[in-house]
Image 1: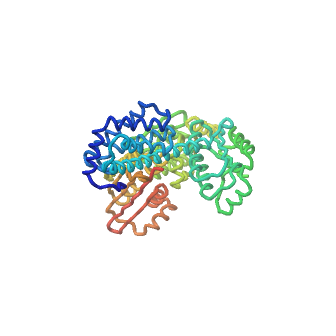
Image 2: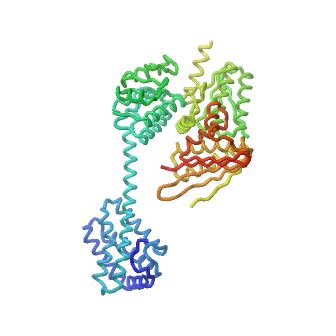
Image 3: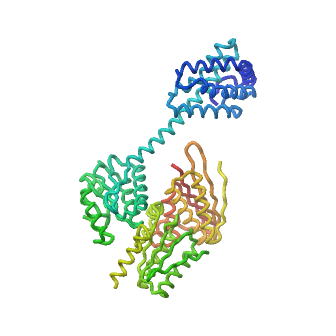
Length: 281
Length: 121
Length: 134
């Protein structure tokens, strides 16, 4: 698809034969060039371990007349994807990774007589290097995604504050995704610890929109369905106004101004003073 | 159809639902419980749904119905062990399980039932 | 891309079978536990409706895999029962009256990422629900 060169299997086959005929020389020079560029961050045997199978795969694919985005090149592309993934995880830059493939051109220039096969090889290598680059980017996005998830995990702590009382101190802006993660984590922790009271403290939350408020309410209702009670504490005046303006009903869900008051309420309830306490104040 | 076993513990009846219940089995459970409450003069029913991965509207209504029937027969019902994923789904489904008391686990459920029977005496 | 698994719905046990089949596909599609539970519950509601109100039908289940972004489970319930005269009303009414049909439909819609329903009086009904992995 992205191969602007001669859509000409014949040329491809000739390039393939050339690669195979000059394998040792090409491989040697290619590995040398990469070695110089990476300055010891990979050992020579490691580089050769990457390049030898790649060169053989390119040669085989081209000899069969296949062009870079065709089926015949599947194996070579798969190997490039793996190379890109490995380099991404090792922390190499996109250019360094693509350069590994581009170096094959220079190797050919250094080692062979330049002629029409070279031009064809040049285009082939360019496209393969671009493909490597794309794979690299995809791999980095995956790493970023994983980090984002870990960050989400870390920023939603559920703490055991007292016997039978959990606390979820939310800090910063809440979005739908984060609130859902918190919801699920809180509910699971209720089961795991056998705590039947939870305090959701939003002192550190500057603003709440409809979606987030709905998620919080659903969390409280879900906890109640499971047999636990939640208290929401730390509602700032601005948030209280927003909630009323949005027409969100808190019903009989308990709210307290401070975490301390919420804790008193939860402990009091826990000692059995009031069964399934529902006071809202 | 599987018949869910009902165990007697003092004046309490214990039910542990271990399998994905089809509608027929759910109805059978309802009937069996009503019968046992009367036969055994039970004053409390504990239903353990820890093993239930799915509670849909039918099962949800079954639980509500059991609670209502038990109340008429002078027995309290407590449902325990609801899984978080199930609770979240029930909220989304809009099922409130009104009239059904719940507790996190069997221990708390039993404590709840025993408190009530003590007050009763 | 996707294989269609068919489950006949002719008795109570089949509703359980549908749940289990949908669960298996949801797991294979990589849905989170909560999302699995939601879509299986939704499927259970529709399957039951198909049995009780149409006298039976068939569930067509598939693992959808459309890279780069769409992966999930799709369930289509088809019957040639009496059909629903006013779908909108059925979905809002039944809910408040606790009547099985409405509760199942509107509940299933809330639990799914995609929900479509076509019904012709005298000919039958077709409900399609889907949930995607995030």
